Length: 111
Length: 115
Image (cartoon, rainbow over all chains, first blue to last red; front, side, top):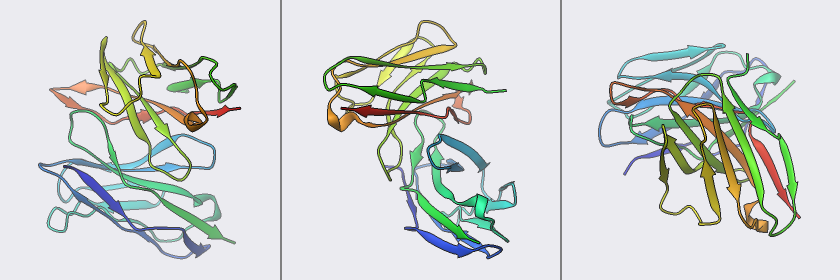
């Protein structure tokens, strides 16, 4: 079946540090890949997506590249802010029904 | 500007007392989903509607029901809430193009507390 594996958190960084949150996937086929962000007490917001191999999704300084050869979609940001503190979910979609989510990675950014 | 709206944002109910959560959308999407998210976990799909067709996940308890009276609205009914049903409930919507689901957009969620 399909699955998504994320690095465990929490990830604690100082403001302006470089961020990487690893995400790898297993899928029978060619999924679309997503990063969603969840701020405390809120629902999920779409952060970025990529629909085919080598696509790069980007938004608000965050980037992720769809790597088919390594089945990965790692999230990166060059300089994090305190306001980026949230839980980040990697997810895949086979275009049929439900998203398959990773377990989420909590990011804490300290001033 | 809100696209997926959930009401209320917080709901308190008593053990065994039926409760209804609501979701509405302004995106005219034909697919609507209900997810349950417990603390520090990933969202878990309960069921979804493709237009008027209801699709239940195999492991969704019978205690959970849903109604979709029109394209814009979808309701989650919990017939007899137990303490284990306390969670965040997320509604999401997506379009469907050329036999493929489009991006899912989530509402802000309703946090349910069962006393």
